[in-house]
Image (cartoon, rainbow, N blue to C red; front, side):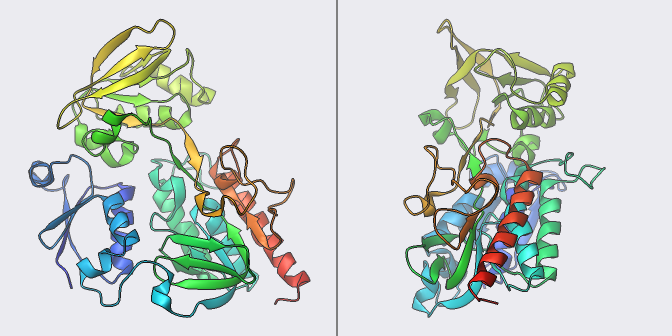
Length: 405
């Protein structure tokens, strides 16, 4: 077994996802908290050249963060690096696919709720949950608006509860990414990075992912001060000025969280008012540490090795100015994770899956879709969970009508 070292911090969803992936492969590791042990943060930066957690070493090799670990797994290289015999990319290494009644592709509130209802209906669902299982809530600090939880609950904690409840009733969960989904044959075929299934019915709940600005300097400085997760990385820049790009609830939530650590947080927004809900906008306005750069966009992220500032451009006048910041957090929205079904299912111009109004039926009989992969409007945990319930009931009734019990 390989010797693995992981630098982490509390309340870091990417750290938890990395540990879950390694645990699913039967690995153990040495965990070093950069907050609990003095000097470990400096040690991590000096060893890795990065300021974000997790930072992972397998033997003498510096792998990087969770995304780097997942990329190795996608490429079929991680098992070899870990000393696992027979590892390889996709399709279960050529093994015959296992046939099941229902496969749920994706997790998060929609996928877990679909799994719960399908399992209670005795459909023995298989959940291909993804390496980053849990969806966007894995990156959410506090969930305050989910009914039944009067006290705020962290997104990762809530998703763990969802998963345990689904598993309690018999859902089988695989922390693997679906890499191929063939909806043009029956039974449908689903291939992951490790195995393959055929299924009588499929529920697609692949969610959505954070958008990036798409500029070269942003890409160059990711993990060096540019981040899409304040929960993961905010404390690493304690005592520095920071900036958040965006104007919705997510951006405001990030700014409020960062105000615990930053000397100042500048919210950079293309408009002259926030798109966030009234309660969130009011919290931001009342926070003395939060400033606003209205009608502005990021022209360039400044810094050689690490972020030192941003140059922003006024969208009306074209004038530019520089802000000194030690970290930049991107919170400009999301795009649906539907590449795996595009060209097979009907989607809108952005990529959201179109479903029959009032249901989760897609354009292919026996394939259902739910959650943020179908929802460009509401994108809330509670609405996603609701459509997950709908998808499971639709799938159960469809299977029963086909005589599949």
